[in-house]
Amino acid sequence: MDVKTKIEDQLGSNDVLLYMKGTPDFPQCGFSGQTVAALNAIGKPYSYVNIFEDPEIREGLKEYSNWPTFPQLYVKGELIGGCDIVIDMYQSGELQKLLEESAT
Image (cartoon, rainbow, N blue to C red; front, side, top):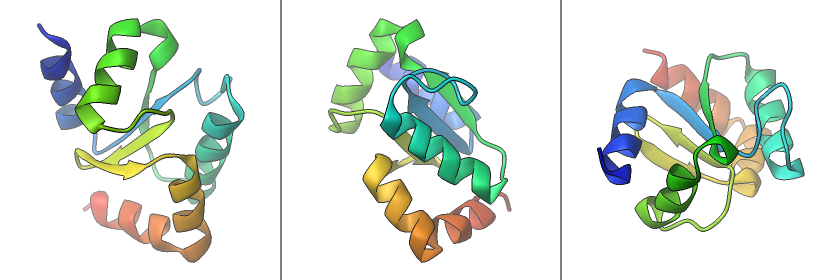
């Protein structure tokens, strides 16, 4: 399976998916930690992929998304953005609304 197919499978199998450095319990960069904190504060379920465990995904995702940095949050297969965008959306209430809608 090529990396693009693998990414599409992951996105198709998870309504809310965070590609991050580390895990939600042990984020390995401040930006991933902030993003996890915002998602955890909302309390809706989400899945994650630790990009350190899969270098192929780590490199392939940059090309797939045309977004060079991590974390990357996807909802229903659509790239929402990285840490700054997620935090801005959380503070404005947009992220909560988006996750509510994705659960239906």
